[in-house]
Image (tube, rainbow, N blue to C red):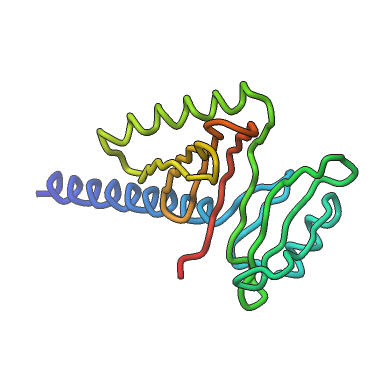
Amino acid sequence: MKVLTFMRLHISVVIAVVALNVGCIVHAQSQTNNVLEIGGFELRLGMPQVEALQLLGTVYDVRPLENALPPGGWIVLRRGVTPTELIGSLGFTGGRLSSVSRTWGGSGVPEASTFASSVIDALRSATRSGSGCAITTETIPAPGGDGAQQARIRCGARVVDIVGARSGPVRASVSETIRTTR
């Protein structure tokens, strides 16, 4: 009887420890899903607008988007480079950070566009089997040209976009965005 009681107690302790660890992992993942780093600065969804703008303004040129719809959009540019280099963008609702986008890369060289197109083709193939994240691919039409290919990988509030031109002016970009749910 004592052995059985001890085993029940031991199993209860093990279950409690496992539940605590799972809870910590889920909490850590939810915290990570609300944070995106730009240039070494961690930006949290919901942080005050003033704090986010001051933080990035110490290193980057942060400008409001003129005529942004909805209002509250800002762009983050690298200081002192020509041509202008987009680092990311911010969106604010009610004085709080509601979206953050970071540009992972972009280039006007043909190899970058070819690479982006290859990645998009691979992702298009991968969507046939399905996975935990939603992956969509599409061709974005352009007047007088083939347009661009885009792949979007959505995992909860986090989205990664990969875009590559099919012809014409060579452009390729990879960006990551987190956004509050509406």
